[in-house]
Length: 136
View 1: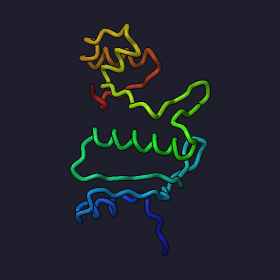
View 2: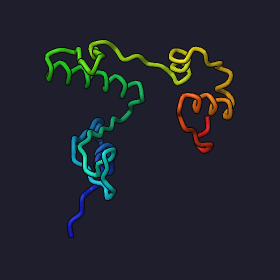
View 3: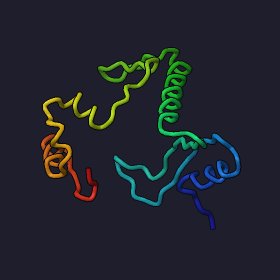
View 4: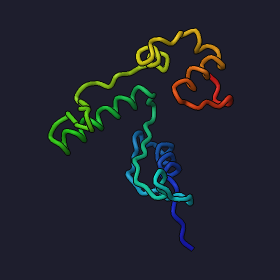
């Protein structure tokens, strides 16, 4: 019998427990699932773990990764995509969910986000389906 792993997670976490502070792997993953135009059961991904790091450290790492990739592959941090140009040389904009709503949908009454039903109504008014189990 032969088996394909679905993710490197367990192996990488063992390395962290064993004393490696930073581990990563770029790998092939396989899922026993259907294939469609929106889903491929075989794909390449990068998975990483950092001991003693929080989400801010991972944001910094991600910014650095994208900046370095753009510069090394394209020779610039300016990356055109459709009608947009993304500048990976600048720090990413960091917003809480509330800050993003306030910035990109300023007409929203922020007090309405404290109540599930009113928050759901706002989301659904712009085409976002919400389940009760998701909470606030």
